[in-house]
Image (spheres, rainbow, N blue to C red):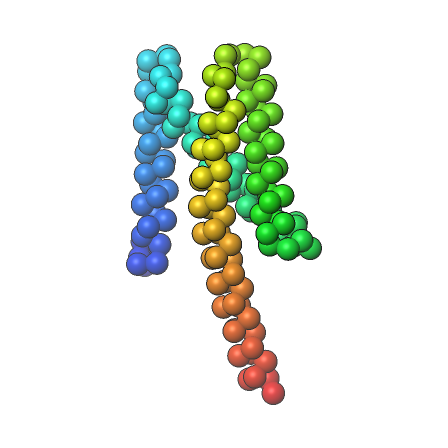
Length: 141
């Protein structure tokens, strides 16, 4: 039995790369006892990725809205979480005056790409499932 094949090689590479990068960065931080800006960015992008995936995974709760409205609601919710988190962090550490804008722009670019890929994939999967259902219906008649 093969666990890695043509259809899943890219996701396996991505997951492996992420695990190794995060693991190595975490190990460096623990060994050195301090975090440099590059390491902070790696963890920050991990958190932004988790936020983006979490928000996109909740699309089924918003199915009563149009797709564009759904994407807008999800985006605004995610940006609100980012801005509130930055505001909370500002009580602990100094935030650059452009920090709010920079975080919003960084997340927006990643979210837009992820949302487009996610919703195109979702649309293709729905079409595939509809074709399968149609084939089943034809066979039953």
